[in-house]
Amino acid sequence: MSGITTTLRALHDGERDLEHDLLAAAARHRAEHEFHHVALDVARWSREHAARLADAGRDHGLDLSGPRDNPASAALTALREKASEALGRRPETGLLLLHDLRDLHLAAARNSLHWEMLAQAAQATRDQRLLALVSSCHPRTLRQMRWTNTMIKVLSPQLLTSV
Image (cartoon, rainbow, N blue to C red; front, side, top):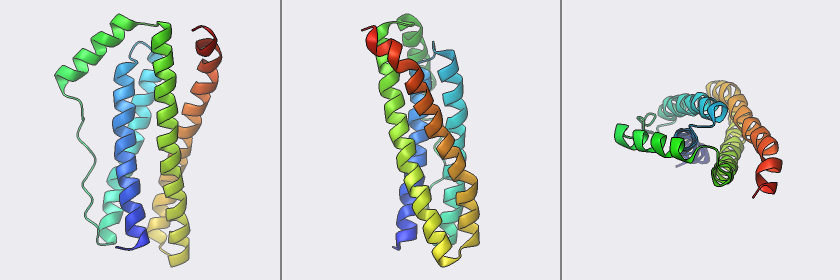
């Protein structure tokens, strides 16, 4: 296995994990409407990235599975929604949201580093298709990072001083 295929696999897994984590956090924080809806939107980006990485993997002799199906069953989703409604906007829920945002930010940062490494390898090997993939997907990952960072900056002062 080459370094490029190792990085493709790690990034594919990272995008799948980020999608799963974003969907789970959106379900957990359904009462936070802005967070909930944006998390669902940016989870789609990770789903698309994983699918495109699977396609690129085939070009490099790698068999990556496609994007995950929705990981949450209907019953589990309904349970999460009820729990979110019951908890509402309590301080403990805010701290959980900050914890989730931190984890999401770190996951997006890890993916961003893998995109950067892939870009460098694509340039070194003059792989135009791989470079086009990175050029298309990496900016979205950077936006995921900026979104989580902004949310942390906005929420931290009030949440951390109110507990």
